[in-house]
Picture 1 (cartoon, rainbow, N blue to C red):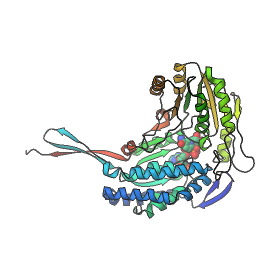
Picture 2 (spheres, rainbow, N blue to C red):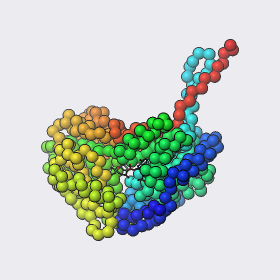
Picture 3 (cartoon, helix red, strand yellow):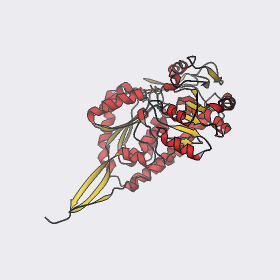
Length: 453
Ligand code: NDP
């Protein structure tokens, strides 16, 4: 059995049967059987089904948000925002089936045309930090393009994926098109990756598991998209609006209790502005409301598990001094206070590894060149921010930083209509926006001879 625990109370909130290889194989077989009919569903009808999924998610928004908040331990206000985005994702990709355009290419003796074809059965493996959102970023474009799906959610947080499966079926998507299998990564995840009838794997999670998936998927030449870890830089220049940068920084580090691949967990601050920035940051961090995820005013909840808390704590009390420590509840629940280390060398373990908890590093820099060098001195390249009032400098630095998603005078990373994904060891492929469709289709070229021979 899979015991699903509520991180704020440490209580078991659900018990589910645990799938193994046989259940994974059965799900792949169902998806393979459903593929020929699903790929032939008229584009307008597929679009309508996706709109219907979006509508049903809106109808069930509050219960989905509460389930996600309890299971992940995330603030209910965040969970509501995420569920609203999930509905938007399905609505956005409802626009795709009728717009999957090919092209014609001038050639001799005939007509040459391209088609975007579905891949077949796609295996989706998702993490515990944003279970429903990350699933939707994969499910939306996969269905729109005519694929069928086997989704393996993280065992720690499978509940909203199970609800999504019900919603998709209720919306009228034929049985077998979308299949959720709850089992461990080592068993069900690996089986999906090695299964010869799975055409592609889309994975979000740790770089370590991503590496293993890429290697195993190579055996059957599967298409792979990987959205992996991050150690993103929030670069604050002395000429920025420092109050605004400091006020925005805490939620960019501690949103989702820091368990966010886009977390700006390295704040690079121009040395001449360090004292002013730290003063404003201290006030902002101490004001973070940490507590019951179901309370509307909560800004940060607990960590996902006791193991995660232990890992996070191992990064504190190393070489870098603790400069700021916020508050966290005591007693039951996997609580950890928001913590800022400063000054930190970019060579410290806390600055090099993805902590995935509410511990961030402040790293001072001298000038623009050093800021870029430090920002890029990491194996990762997922997101990041630049704060400055100098537009030319902002764009120069944005072009030089090796990262997939960057914002200027803002800490946002994700929008439904724009591409999301990493450089370097943060992954390969893109999710969201029109770009995601490229990763759920194969390009086919057809030549039609028109000249008599
Ligand atoms: P994992 O990468 O292990 O898990 C992510 C998903 O992959 C889960 O569904 C998991 O299943 C599955 N999985 C695990 N092993 C395999 C495998 N061999 N083959 C196929 N699928 C597999 O992340 P963790 O949950 O262990 O978290 C560890 C660290 O990873 C975090 O501390 C954080 O640093 C990073 N992480 C990064 C994320 C990101 O968004 N960048 C998201 C999650 C984690 P199951 O857990 O059910 O066994």
